[in-house]
Amino acid sequence: MIEKLNKAFCVLPGVGAKSAQRFVYHLLERDREGGFELAKALVDAMEHVKNCSRCRTLTEKEICEICANDVRDGSQLCIVETPSDIHAIEQSGVYSGKYFVLSGYLSPIDGIGAAELGLDELEGLLENEEIREIILATNATIEGEVTAHYIHNLAKKHGIDTTRIAHGIPIGGELEYADINTIAHALSGRKSYD
Image 1 (tube, helix red, strand yellow):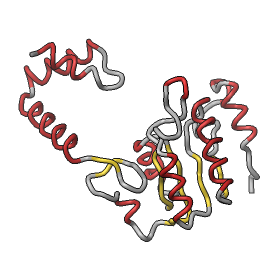
Image 2 (cartoon, rainbow, N blue to C red):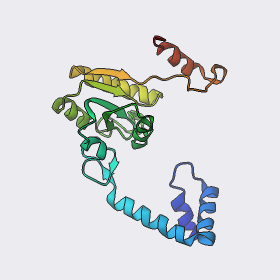
Image 3 (cartoon, helix red, strand yellow):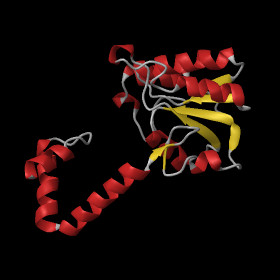
């Protein structure tokens, strides 16, 4: 039973056999109550959390709170790879539009195409809603750039403007520690100092 629990923890990203073993022994030796709470929370989440029928983020409702919020700007649609990306953007407090979650990126080698990312659903939004701008917030990887390019072409077909979030040197970062691709993105994405 302990080995089964170890394997169960190993399904989490970044958790190897040693970390899983530490978690298991901690719960069994020192925090059984916490273990029961963890188990209950996991079962509840697995049974009740699903994808929003509009934007595909994770929610307990048919439509998530962001999509249901009429105060948010429905003319802006930010495309992200994961629900956690929404959380990161929301923490900034500067974006008030809506989202669409891809749950990945285009990767034909891995068998991930447009259908797996829900791009047909995205096209339905572009056809049926008054979207004026798509903000591409995919990761700055080769796959993220290919995905962004595909979505840009889709938006262009519908006459919708596309912008890309800036990539570059983080606040507090130093140039000497940045890789050449980051520096290249930062230079090409520069804007007026005014």
